[in-house]
Image (spheres, rainbow, N blue to C red):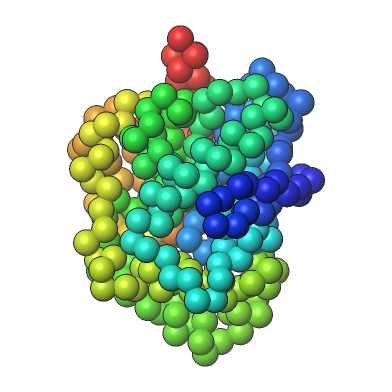
Length: 270
């Protein structure tokens, strides 16, 4: 993948977003947009998006949200609000897709989101149902659980007492921006009431929700809650798998996504 940058105009100051296309020559094939986790980035996906696109003959778009990777860092004084995932879903991502529209002829991409990225994908699909062809939500969050908070508290301790900041330099130009942007908002008292459950009944596109049995950041209540409110959702539960199924069970993940898109792609184009 060739990493590029695009400037997104903003009310205060422009955002510089790093992105990369996968197999852009497949202009007639489905486009998968990969949305990383709360501490992820373009680079942290490694080669898994390319593997999925190769297996399904798809195109792909991978990018780092503001505050992550090589994109515009979060200012040190800035604290994200509890609605930060809504901001990414309803403001940043649509502006990015619009800015790159000349490089893609697919009006309705498939969103493949991990963790916070999965929640962002669900928010956009629920609030703007005509904007996406379908959603693959990998270990998403639809409400806040005690297990999530406990694991995020452990992550903060690890960041303060181990070499985690040094290791994150491989994936983020500003590790503090990436880590504390995510960690501070999740541990803020006002975030405990965050939920997107009510909007899930507005999901009308195909949805595939995937979670590992051993996910340390959430229970199966997360994806089960999606199907309760969006009965068309298909669930995949993976044994021997934690919070990152694309690393723990990469082959099973790829197979599930390729089959899911193949089953639904003809219907979404009607």
